[in-house]
Image (tube, rainbow, N blue to C red; front, side, top):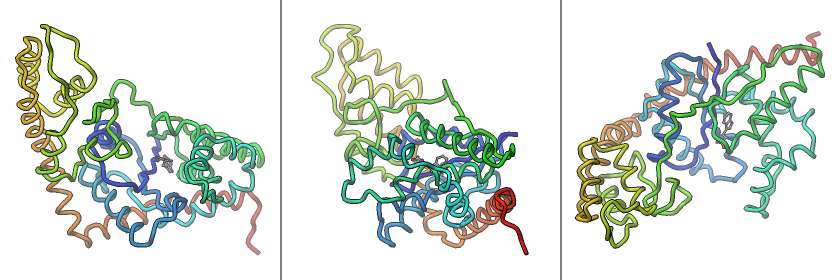
Length: 331
Ligand code: TRP
């Protein structure tokens, strides 16, 4: 059985792009792996959230992940800050992480550029904290996208370095969990090829959106004047609408609008109305669970306590071993 670790940044609500891109695979993965999923609230401090924002965004992602089907009985779902052993392992790893390699990291350079007024040490050592998250459970697989590959490479470097330095074979080398074909890319409503929250208001449909909000966003989606010749190739914004329809609508519905497009009889208003309705239906169960969970702090507390207990067991074992390997001895 693989040991899988993944961190979730507490930034905003989940949208359909997140759901089809990663979360659906997390839900599948939980069936036959030992999964540790945590909310990376230590990491989020690099951007200096206010106390109120911090709790709110942690709660939001917790609720969204539970609503999307992550089962706290099957996985270890926890808050990073509930396991201070992570901070201790991070400290140890930092002793063998070098300025040069940390400064060369692409995500650090990007952050230093985008927040020049706040280039803190937490940003520089983001990769050692992420490595600690992963190797604290001796993970073998990490389900991350392309943007995290360099961090994962650094994790392997730090794990190997520890093994070499202390002449042990303690930490395994974690590799990316590759979904290959299963990754579905969801386009945005603004004509861009990617649904994302940083692409601007109206581009993304969130699992928590109200039916009215969904209708409004879909009706505003970018289109064009319509096809002028039969079987014309679809420009990107139109292709996007069909691709979105492909994931939320019935095949007959898609075929119906394809035929109208190909015979130049399509009315985008009709297509959008149908797409909005199918999105509202698709997201309804998520929306209901999000509303229920958000109002049930007692249950959420139970979930994080259970997660903390399970994560602690695994993390404490590793840190105990690591202390011994490093040479800390009890008198
Ligand atoms: N860096 C990851 C991201 O930006 C979040 C993260 C933190 C993570 N620790 C991790 C992912 C450990 C996987 C494993 O999305």
